[in-house]
Length: 302
Image (tube, rainbow, N blue to C red; front, top):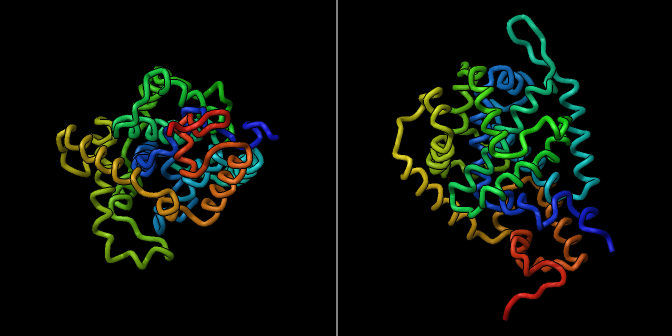
């Protein structure tokens, strides 16, 4: 029988499963994009080399696919998407002030990674996911493996809360709001739906409260830099985030997964099949495997 390391990149025993299977990830993902946009060079890289202006939701789904594959995918699937991402980044350039920069510059890759994973962790914990500080540190340590797939050396990536806080303190003087940053927040508050979701356009106004929730979960210093929305009490934001998380986590996995692109859904289905063959109880889906009693050699209480 294959070992768990041959089945999925991150095993169900990892803290990563607790965070990445939590539905607050959708808030964390959009928050991460808003945070990333405060780095002028990184923002211009997105603006010049993607269709973000036309389909910001598409970028979120592509990010979800990458995160899913380097978490729940097989090592082969993770290696494949890692090679693909590194290959694309290697070819792209950024024009800024008459100079040209590489998209795969380690500083830019590190900023994107840290803005992303810190957002996942902070939003999940604030939303009610009960992680200890030790588990939070473990999550960031585990995410060094994900950073390696985009071309970063794991030792160069913050692997604890203290290291992450020091990294952001170092980066803050380099951050500022440029026109593209402000436009990005506006897009994320009122996005253009991708073609396959245009049928949902009548319900688009419902999205604004979600976008606003993502914005309000940004650090205070980031919100002050943007100044896009008026401030509201922190307790109100936390209550709204917890309500969103509770509602989203109550959705059946097969319903929730409809938000992903078809290749992502296929990858998740294949992951469930491999885990089932290895003796994991996947009757409640991947999310059910956050319960250790569904692992091989254990039984659920009657």
